[in-house]
Length: 172
Length: 173
Image 1: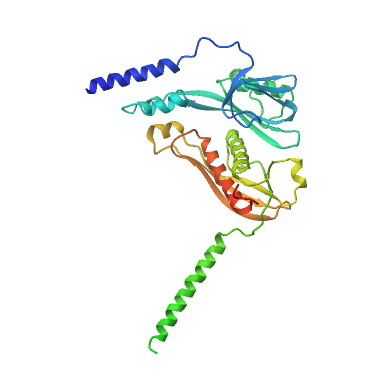
Image 2 (image 1 turned 45 degrees about the vertical axis):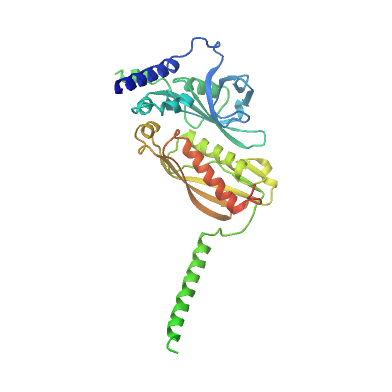
């Protein structure tokens, strides 16, 4: 009886792994940086998925329902960071909590790293806004460079390639 | 006649208890009964404590969102909004981070008891001229479910309630 229950739980966990761990093959062509708007962008729901593109002096966030743009010259601060999140999240993540023998807790150990991009900008009335985006690892710094190149301000200087600088320092 | 001293002692005891209760109520009550139709939220300051940028923005945005939803004010203005200049009965909310402990979502999920994220913020409500009207410490935390940024939502809910209870012109809304 116990062996049967263990076998069922193993199949359950393997099913979840198979359904979520591998990215789907059919993805739309790459346009801008794929991001999740965590919060702050006016007129966009929290945790909306979309693409972020700096072009023609505007930072454009485009998702299935709307297109929001922020003038880059109004961006007062751009800061990058990093974080991590559960691989199994959302409804499936909640369902894993019900898995027997602490399976949910075990699955909590699987976490994916991600980059965060935080911006502060002013609206037409001068009101200060903030927005937080998360994206795949290594995507935030190039986006910040592009924003700064187009006129955004930042309180944290852009990091140069650490590998190259280290190599130069080692030379006698 | 023998009972007179006893009655006097009981009366003195009752009177002192009543006086103490009144005094305690006076300390917890807001310093002024001023009501306002609008509130302006300034960006969260964290000069002494190193706070990640996403937490700072999340605190600010969640606070504005909660004040708009449940604050009971006609208008909620952001820092720098020119429209706030014309409002006579404006209350300005200054928030300063006094303590921050970034926990771990993984530790919370795995152990249930460890990994708490906690933020302590000193809230000061002033009038337009900068005169202090109320000062309180408000805490935001996440103990069990959710990411670390959820602590900012907890703070925002408490901060909005504090503003509504003390300054909102129509607190029922």
